[in-house]
Amino acid sequence: MKLEAIWYGRHWLAWPLVPLAGLYRLVVAARRQAFRRGWLASARLPVPVILVGNLTVGGTGKTPLVLWLSDFLRRQGWYPGIVLRGYGGSARDWPRRVTAASDPRELGDEAVLLARRSGVPVMAGPDRVAAGRRLLEEGGCDIILGDDGLQHYRLQRDLEILVIDGARGFGNGFCLPAGPLREPVSRGRDIKLKVATGGAWPGAEPLGLRPGDLVNLRDPARTQALARFKRQRVTAVAGIGNPERFFALLRQAGLHLDERPYPDHQGFTAADAATWPPGPVIMTEKDAVKCEPFAGEEHWFLPVEAVPSAAFERQLSAALKGLKHG
Image (cartoon, rainbow, N blue to C red; front, side):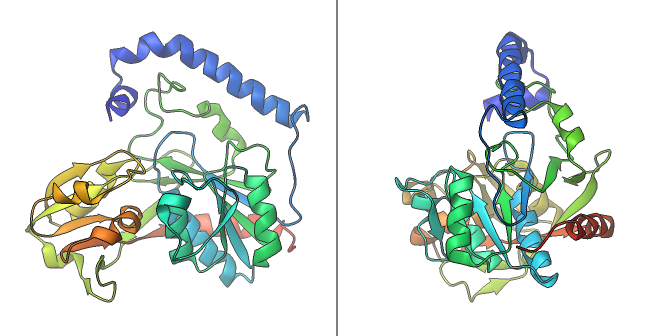
């Protein structure tokens, strides 16, 4: 949280880190060139690969977009599968097939969320090439979606989609550790398909995030309209890359919040839940997959759905015409 205040607040503490950021940028550029020139080995899978990612550390709305893409591709006659790192998972053997019943502590919260919501095969593993190959062996897919894989250059890709935080942008414009950038802003020039969440961004199509009905953690068949809690005081829990986006969504719905931001991929425990006040607790869906074992009767999560622009759909459809079914 303190780092984000430096990265996005143009804090003076970023300047002592600028030399390290310059070194980081040189290493990143050299690594990318090494893959482009074949000095470092990369692999092409026998089916098209679409990678969704961002240039900054933290959340930008990639996972809702991947869910939308998996549904869009199926409607276009494809049979997609999803690969991702499985960040935060404690499993020792990778890659691993992810199901709705998988333990998020082993395979990662985002992986389990995608397996539950997407309805397509999901494979997690730090080595995206190995995960993609295993997915093709087991899943019967003819196209692969990679969640957060732009910087994983070992896996060759046919199409990249860049997700930008339209509210925060690229922060102070520095690479790590002085700023939030994994790669320089110039990297985005190579990516034709761009979307922006949370606000407009030049050259990017808007990507809306539409909230659904609240779902009870103890009894998923029990739902409530978000408007049910309008003008009520609720505890809002978010262990995601940008908690403020989630809190703003709840405030826009008229809720009064006791905000509880946590680090991204927070490993929630019953001890955390014991610190939340009595009454309604509303959290993100990603956090909910970890809180189910100790959830109370008034613990809810808010699913969100990506809503791309019509222009983005046209751009995507045109790009897909150049890809061959595996």
